[in-house]
Every structure is written in C-alpha cells, then in structure tokens.
Image (cartoon, rainbow, N blue to C red; front, side, top):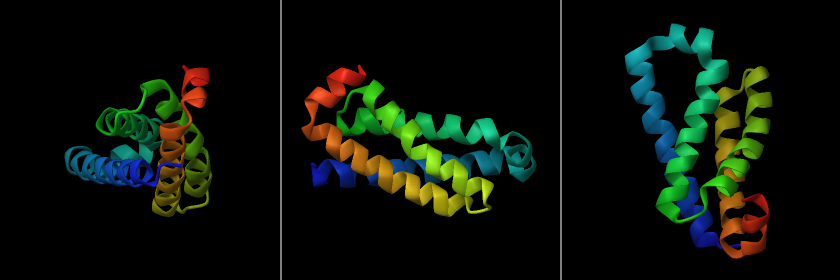
Length: 112
C-alpha cells in the first residue's frame, strides 16, 4: 500500500466531489437530484475518479473499477438515508484501492 498515493487520491476525490456537488447544486437545484440523483450521482462520482486517476498518475480503467466497487456501499448507505456518510466511506475505500494499485502493478494489468 502506497500511503502517499492513497492520501492524495482521497483528498483529490474529496475535493472533486465537494466542488462538483456545490456547482451542480447551485446550477440544478435540489429537485434535480431528488428526481435524477440515481444516475447523476454515480456519473459525477466516476467523473471525479477519472480526474483523480489523472492527477495521481494511475491507469484509468483500474481506478474506475475501484470507484465502482467503492460506490456499492455508498449506494446502500444512500438507500438507508445516509447519503453523505456513504460518500465519505466510498472516498476512504476508493483511496485505499488507489494506494494498493500504486504498488500492485499486476492488479492494474489484470484490470486493463
């Protein structure tokens, strides 16, 4: 596990999610997310993960796979009414995935 990459990935993902959430909330309003959050949220999450992959220097496909996997518990938390708690959990899991990818090149090659 590369802790430095994990920390950077977590911070970049957190910043990306926060900024994108604020911008979209200002532009689209709460009603949009109430009606369309089931697809807009995961799409925004993957967009932020793609940016994170670029910033920390990891391959896109394995990072997106980790984002999808980290998003599963987040989705379950959202169903339970714990949207932001689930998002924070997903960021931690995603960061750990990225930290692992940084040292496990075989895992990256298997996913690509």
